[in-house]
Amino acid sequence: MASYLLLLGLLAITSSVVVASDQSPLQDFCVADTVSPVIVNGRPCKDPKLVQASDFSLSGLHLPRDTSNIFGSNVTLITAAEIPGLNTLSISMARVDYAPGGLNRPHYHPRATELFTVLEGTIEAGFVTSNPDNRFVTKVLQKGDVFVFPVGLIHFQRNIGHGNAVAMSGLSSQNPGIVTIANAVFGSKPDLPTDVLVKAFQVDRNVIKDLQMKF
Figure 1 (cartoon, rainbow, N blue to C red):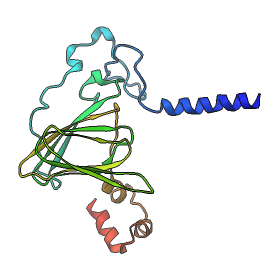
Figure 2 (cartoon, rainbow, N blue to C red):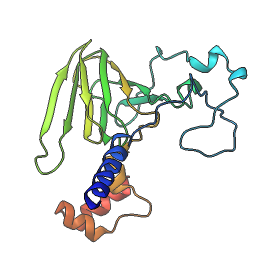
Figure 3 (tube, rainbow, N blue to C red):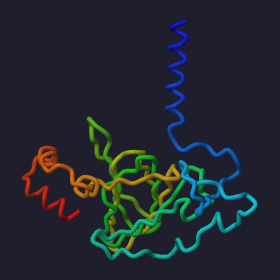
Figure 4 (spheres, one colour):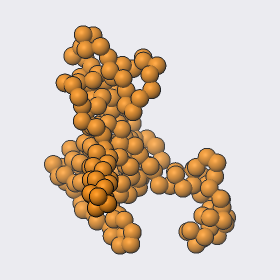
């Protein structure tokens, strides 16, 4: 009897791990109702009788984005907020524009693997594996090349070509989330304790204070 209960417990744990991602839809679609006051894990469904073709489309993604910022890049994320018909379908996407030398800073997506495709330009892309190896995996990508950033791993891209660059990403979650490393560590609200960061990064207290001021 004890072994039977143990087996059931192991099956329950395994099942919970298997489904620890966006759930599969239970109907053809669940177009997001953007005005509903209901709070759920995702967005509530609009009445199917009120659904329009416009709920499944978006225009203007071909237009260049403004990259005149300190990092020389611009990420346009497309989720159910922009295309309500994406709701419950476990996918999202992004257009990324880069000025020459532009950088999409080191970050990670806690809920999504990213499939990154270069449309124009030359981009260096890379990610770092988890502890204890922390192996840096990187490749220079040309137009038409594809690179995968596994879920939860820190990654970046930068334009190493002479002109502007554009890429498109597919993400395996309706809400992939993004944690930008520098912002999270040095721009938290309230600040992380200075002595914690001094010990973690093995640098002078003034360096930490300067970084916290910048973020």
